[in-house]
Image (cartoon, rainbow, N blue to C red; front, side):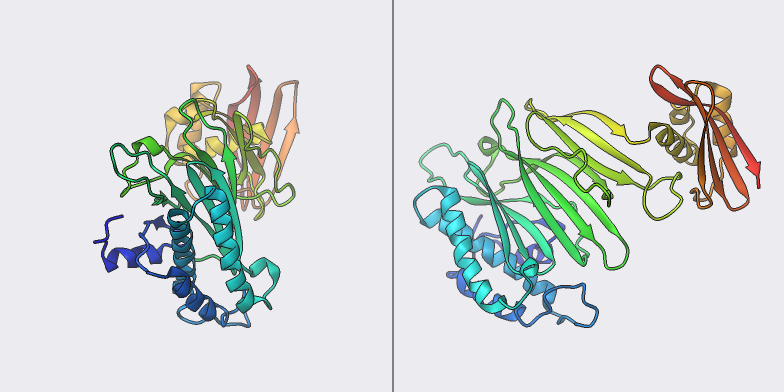
Length: 379
């Protein structure tokens, strides 16, 4: 990056070090590892986790966490540009040295809250997961292709972190390499698992790709190629998930009108084909396709989207009745849900909430469930 990068830009980068938009800051310190040691000393006085309500962190905790990531990344970048050898080996050596510094200061912390790291070697891209306390993030380092006499230098690779900058009690991350397309650009998947302080969990998946041939040394950036947000399945944490081979499967759950309590009823798997130069969405499958139709038709009917509602109905009258009669307020099956089988390929789904019951008659046509009739019954 240009040496004229301002202090203000560096401050913006710090504010989003664990979440938000990561703006790479070229190493501005003659000795970032010295700065790293200073920050580690400060972090060692903090509680090891945000889950303990009896401990109170200092007002500078978030800034010090951000500086921890910044100086760790700068140390790795300096090593990549000053040492000879395999880039992954150089990176891991730098991480081991950083770990010794952290371990000497936080050795009494629970292991799960101490310094954690993982390296993905996607040459000419190195992706490093960095974790401390209850938070994890990643940094990417690339070696762009250059034309002319300019020496190739490793650079920070910018990316947009889909997570909000608001800190969660626990923010964990896993990285998975993805198959490259015919153009051989490196790809990987970031899988986030976030636990809020008292308001549940969420999962986020983002696939990234980097094109070294299209990258100027001052503006390297990862390109987002897929994304999915949702909720975890508490009973089956890894059901349906796959990030290897030419097909990627991402599993998640989601709240809808068919829920009768806090845990979602519907869980889906999105399938992507990553064999080409463009990642292609293939399809979505859901654990209860009949209830998915009910959830989707309520969602679109409440939004008065008649065209979308028609896609879930067997006839125009039912679609119009749904749009004109569906309750406008937030509806979910707080008082229960029933699925009543009828003739083959037919069933009735009843959702009860307060003094009203929504009744959907479903029929299977060409392997799809569709709504053939809709009624509102007083209770």
